[in-house]
Every structure is written in structure tokens, then in C-alpha cells.
Image (cartoon, rainbow, N blue to C red; front, side, top):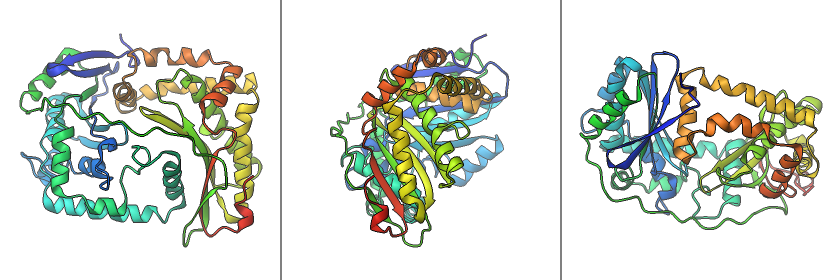
Length: 430
């Protein structure tokens, strides 16, 4: 029996690729995703947020069903649809009973290819997005993350902007903009499918072939995106952003990381795990929170994507502790590149990470995230099968070298602070 880590790739009419993941246990649930290049990289300048608003409105009514009827149909068959939009892709996912998988696929394609963008729903979604954007500017964590991305990636780069856009740019988006964006980026060549199912692949392929015949697709490819080159923005005084009425301070230190296909990925993933991914084991949590009691949270994240990436070490703290927390984050980050991780610590982290991988196969939903990653980033089909082996090969020296040579600004990171007004003595560079 095939493992859910063992994927297959097929091709549908028109050259549409499908990544098929056979879920080995009969759970009764299937998950199907459409993946397309309807990403924020194609937002019109001055109308940032267009891709996200388009994705959000896909479920607001189609040429066959109103929003209410569509919602009732999904409830009737115990199914749900979700949409994710970022700088690399848009993913529209439906999950529901395997016995109704044919109907799931029909509804997925209807939502993807035949939305009508009702005027009242456009107005409502635009208004709600603007309210969310304004609210985020009052939250230290979301504000610091946004200002970090703006400082790290230049204007014109898809990662520079929040996927939701800005208050002013969203306010400019019209229904005509949405319809044109959909026409250019959803029906164009280049879309893909990912399927996690206990059915045979040929059954699923047959359903997709039949369902696709009912939709008219374009033969015009999506225009290529050439984002501006990225230069490291690091060092100097911390970027400070006061948040009126806030009591908590968000502290971020970070820099650039390579794209997802970089050979250093296994080593960098383990470096991230050692630094701050797993609370009980990671250095940031133990040093900043457990040993010193200075933070509400302390962790790290690593994002390796199509057009580059970035890394973060973050903490939430009180105003009185900003300087100490920032200095501790900087110390732990620099230590990763200045000295090798002890073999025993690396082995503990590595074994915990590898041991958690089978848990991703507990449900079709969690397993499907793996198939989505392979689909979006066009990774080798055997990537998941060999990932544990690649992690096991990483030595302490290789990990240290990856941090030193592949993580930008590890020794002099970009620092962003947001929270209540900061006394000058608390924002001086360490």
C-alpha cells in the first residue's frame, strides 16, 4: 500500500497537472485543491489587496447558485470551502465526504471558474477588509510584522505588501477590477490540482475530466512577474512604531532567507527548530520566557517561498522589558552562526521534528497540506519520502554554515518594535 508521503502526478486535458495523494486509511473524507497563479504578485499598483479580495468573493455567488443557496448546498453535503491567497499562489480547497467526491469537485470548479461578484457582496467584503486593516494597525504584533516586511522587501515586490492591501488601495478596488482579475488569472493556463482521497486515482481523474468540460477556460497564459531585486536591509537603529492604547510590545529581529528550492533548506529548518519553533525545547522560549520571565511568547519562524524568503525571531513583552528582550533575541540569533549547536541538542530537536512528521498523516486534511506544498512549489514527488533522510544528514557544522551564509543579517538583524511610546534608552541599538 502506498504511503501518503508517496505522491503521484498525472496530467488532465489542456496540460493541467494533478498531484494525487492516496490516503491509505478509509477515513471517509476527501480534500481537493485548485492552485493557480492568481497571487498578490499580480495586484495592480495602487490597488494592492485585489487578489485577496477576489479570492474572498469566490463563494459569494456563482452563475448557478446564489451565496445562500451555495452555502446551503455545502451544509447539506457536510462540506466546506476555504481560500488562501499570498504572494506565490491562490489555493481554493474543498473538503467533504468521499462518497460525494464527484459533487465536491463540481462545486469546487463552479466556485473557481464561475463567480459573479454581486455588487452588494463586493461592497460588504471591501468594507470588512478595510475595517480589518484598520484594526490590525492597532495591534502591535500585526503592525510590527507588516512594517518588517515593508522594510525588508522593496516596493513592487509581492512580499512587500500585506496580502490584504492597504486601507486606501482596497477602497479603490471596483467590481470591474475583480471581474477582470478573475478573467485574467483564474481561467488562464497554469492552474493545478491537488487531491487527497482514498479512491483510486483513475476515478478522481475521470471526475475532473468530466467536470472541466463544463467550463470554458482561456488559452492566454498569465503574464510573468519580474519583482525587483532584493537587497538586505539591516542594522542601524531599530524601526519603532508606537501603537496608541497598547500595553504590550512586539519585538522582531530578522532578515532575508533563500527561496524554497535552496539546498540549505534542511539545515535552515533545523536551525529554526533549535532557535524557536518548539516551546519546550527551543532556545528562545527557554531563555527569554522560562529562565528570565520577560515575554508572553518567544519563538521564531522561517519562510522559504518562490521568490525568496525571510526569517524572524519574535517576542511579546512589557514596555519595561523591551531592551532586555531585544538583547536576548539578538544574542540567541547570533549564537546560531557563531558556534555549533551541541550534537546532543541537535539530535534531540531533530528526533522530535522527524517523530512529529507521521502525525501529519493522522487526517486527510493535515496530509493534504503536504500535497499542497508539493503542488504550489513544484517540489519533487518523492520530497516527503526523503525529507527525514535529508534532516538526518545535517551536521552541527553544516547547520552553523547555513545560518552564516544563507540567513541574511543573522549577525546584524533588522529590528522592528511596536507598542506604547518608547523611551529613547529602550530603543538604542544593542
